[in-house]
Length: 154
Image (tube, rainbow, N blue to C red; front, side, top):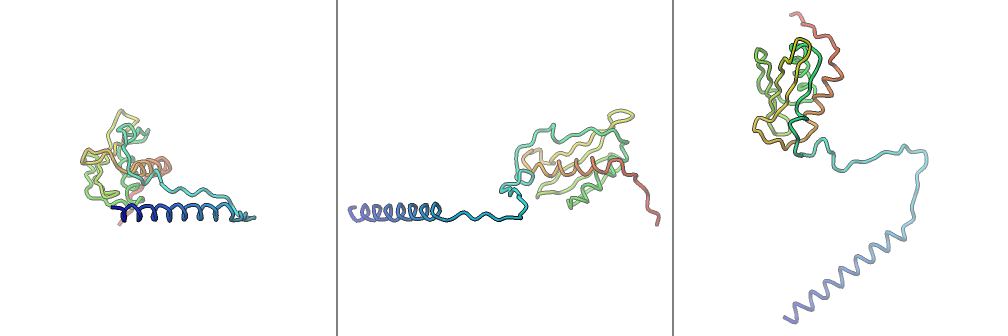
């Protein structure tokens, strides 16, 4: 028992000594400032890619474009974000895709004659996923919603 206590005491002294010597080196180290550099911020934990609890309100967005146009923009946005498209049902207006190792359902519904709503929900009903999945898709549609959709002839 005495031998164990001595080892603990010696180990504690070594840890304290290492801690103090490391702090002394950090304090004594000169600070070098670089000139002619562009300042930037490094984000260690990207909030768009970190899984988090998402409210249902963040999963829906209303657009003032026709249903067919929103469906094609959602399909293009899913493809542009390099998500895997698993199933497309254009008649009912839904797309099943995989992103961040999770399946999502994107459904396009008509609200009235001039507006539509896009809902992106996880198929398992668990709203714990990276918010970037839905925000990047909504941003893509916001940027490209005025683009004309044309049929490419064969």
